[in-house]
Image 1 (cartoon, one colour):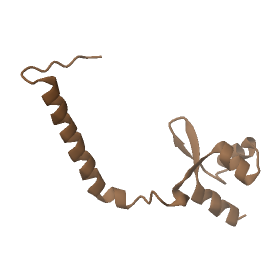
Image 2 (cartoon, helix red, strand yellow):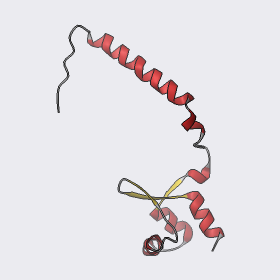
Image 3 (cartoon, helix red, strand yellow):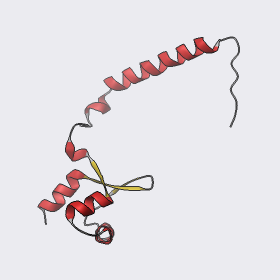
Image 4 (cartoon, helix red, strand yellow):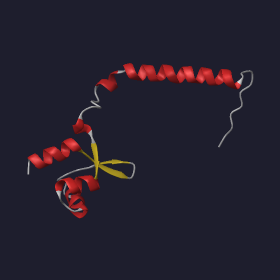
Length: 96
């Protein structure tokens, strides 16, 4: 890890300045357009784990894996985690 040396500014003044910059960035993000396109309160945007989906659909984890391979029910991957959109599960059950 590299080091950062600041000369001519005291730590408390630097901290206050950094907090102000972060606050301004957060306020700007609150007002941006992208936030308006993501309905955070919508239950259909909820993500479910494999275990939750298997319990909800009353199928095994192996069945979920097979459906994923056949692209019957496609999850999303967040790093190493596998999640399903609740809206996809609802659509899947309605179309079965």
